[in-house]
Length: 344
Image (cartoon, rainbow, N blue to C red; front, side, top):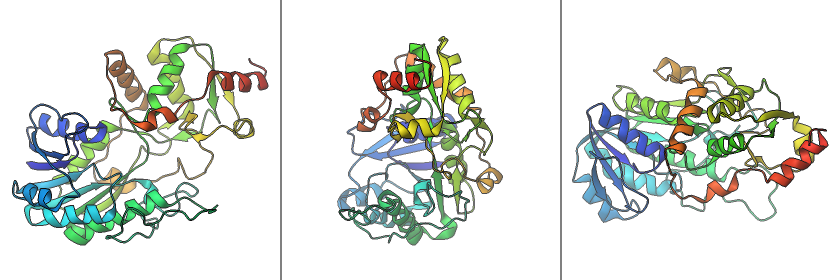
């Protein structure tokens, strides 16, 4: 199997490359060379997806059985469209990693793999969908950009040769966002530790290695389709997750459950100050039967937690990214909430 990975040096892209190499596949990686190197054994072509000459030069390195695109999170749909058009003659299939944000109902409504996708033309520029000043409705900017990029790939490769993957939260070794590393660090400090919401709240993070496995499965499949890449509903709860963090770090942290209302009343920023906590009912209500039927297998969340802690302990360092600093509650603020709960 001969594949081209767009990206290949960060988190998911790097895991896709490593997994493909372990399978004995021939892997070409295309990126700008600014954020690390791909795993040893991959062939690198450096270039910029916004430069037509670089895309033409890349196409000359083909053909490939499949393209796996993990690097389009901050690119305009028209840039993805240019990439897909340049590669269509030299690639059999295109696997595009999108996001559940592309659904109109995210994060308020439960989702299926047939839920409505946001508007977003395939040739949109980076400003399409930006919010007007004073807007107080849903922030669909990122979702519209990703939806447009999905259409850009399909417009170039067609339905049968296009695979769209829509992950929710991806965790695991190499994470650069900082969600799971923050919780592990907090658990390692011990003491009374705020646990947000309800213990039995179902959550659906997926391991980066499981997304990579599924992406490569689909790269070698004979069909197209759109799939939600999330753990099955009910596989893990918030209590399972936080308990795994405590156990992995071998700490004596004590979970103190704080109801949603208490956290909201204290102005806790959802999704960031206490990562993975959000009150919107659709966040952890995403069905994925089509993906599971097509071969998506999700390992236990405790395994993801253990392996991420081991990676951090072994000196693993994420790519420097501004989102890391967004995550985590200040100790003084956590203390105030614990005090309000009568536990501080």
